[in-house]
Image (cartoon, rainbow, N blue to C red; front, side, top):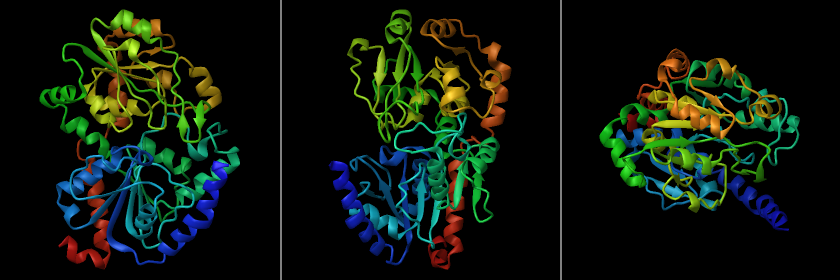
Length: 406
């Protein structure tokens, strides 16, 4: 019944109102940002926005952030709004530029006079979009319907940000992004600038203090991806793992603590109290870039966090207990991970513990170098400037912005 009411409100109130709002003139000074469907202030949109602030353009443009928690602290001059409220539709209807890092609802339509900059949120290991052979995600229907929705959604995008040439080629097929009117910016990811520019002892120690993490132990960051077929409902996935945290605590707690970071679409309320002092949990509002910097080592599986964390040249462990099922049934991969992964692959907690205790960087040094050469070429601490520069160029192309840019 609740869903019926929601559908009625959407179809008979929201969409008609949104249609009226879209007849209003475009505000050429208005830029709207969203990361992780509004669940936090992070990702590429955050660091593009902060570069705009750094250059002082937040005083000249009207910047709007879509957030679940509008009390989130954000630097500069900005307006904070909630998703799916009247103001949300008003600003979407009037904004000249959208800067988002995830897909948006199908009923959201970009103005023809506007620009949609899709910054995306990772380099793909697992297949996505039009490249999938089947779909298991909640509420996505059959594969034909899913691909139709992907195609229709990506038609709205004008520009797509890419971390590296490898991603650029995949995005062309995965998002059917081959139209001559569209452009991929292979600039590196703005969200990773901090990993180059702030990778120093003073900054990291301050982060540890702010996070309440001990300074006298090594920090493991466990950041797995979600499983398409393990969900509570659409856009709300389960935290699924075969990791034995009791065994980890027993064997590693003398020298290590572990941060467990859920994927932003994973929603769980797990009682971690039995691991107090060993396991640290931070909510979706915490920017994972800060956790990268604090972590001495990363544990992941098929998540694109591997491509970001490798910038730091620190050890990466791959806990892939379900690799055969994930690779052969659930998603599939774009490359042979057994050949390219720059760290040990384990399927059990016991193997993972042995890999951590016996880690030898020299054994993976050549693979690590090749990995970084392929995926981190543009992660030089200047990606935000490149992306922001192009946005300002777009605005400068419009005669309306000539006076502002000067």
